[in-house]
Length: 261
Ligand SMILES: NC(=O)c1ccc[n+]([C@@H]2O[C@H](COP(=O)([O-])OP(=O)(O)OC[C@H]3O[C@@H](n4cnc5c(N)ncnc54)[C@H](O)[C@@H]3O)[C@@H](O)[C@H]2O)c1
Image (cartoon, rainbow, N blue to C red; front, side):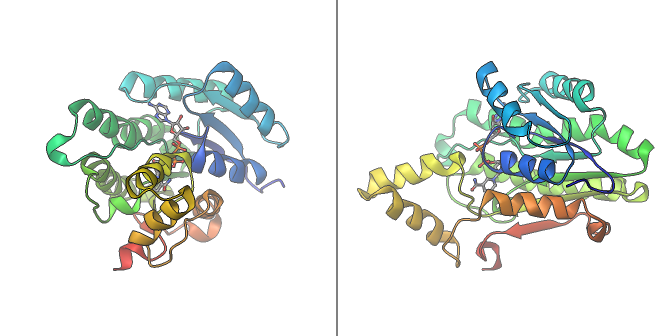
């Protein structure tokens, strides 16, 4: 399908899970996508082959965005491959769970760098071109943990609450240029990121993987089913459409009622 106005879309962390689903949604809709994530040359080739069925141009970068320099590398790779992005989707993220009083400093810094600071550096570097063009979309994949807390997720909750705050500032500062900034706040989404948590429950409670998954999701969500990654992709696509032009500064839960409690 060819959209009336194809966008150039950078999606961080799009080798897997939610980011990959978002990339497919935009590419299917005829937009040009910049794929990104930690992947070796073979995985990169497989990914590019997977996207070659779409009509739009596709690029790939494996820049490690846990540093400011890595974010600058990603910006430069993106400009070279598809030009200045009109849509930035900050999706890359990692997880680590431990009580705050035992949380390793290295994990704290890593989670803050990837889940929060990278979103800031990329928005800072890409906003000037969006402002000049008079149109842009920034979508931050936060989490229900940007709205409420859970035990053992000190760094993740701090980063995701920070990302929701950053989203609101970007929305205010760029409201005069047709640029919106929104956060999507998913509850449980079926991706590799939640696998270690499912396996830990299976180990601790000596139950099978299916029972552990049901236990994990049902413990927090009134709707005890995980969201599909495609649902997040379709919402991101909607936020780039004409009907969403005045949705800005929002933190949109997609969480089976988790944050309504
Ligand atoms: N899965 C869920 O239940 C869930 C729920 C709420 C929010 N989220 C958020 O959604 C986003 C995507 O999560 P997912 O479940 O798809 O994760 P995932 O583990 O499937 O994918 C993570 C992506 O980030 C990339 N990445 C990680 N560290 C990187 C680094 N240093 N440099 C560059 N890329 C890096 C990986 O290569 C991969 O492409 C994350 O921000 C996560 O916090 C996930």
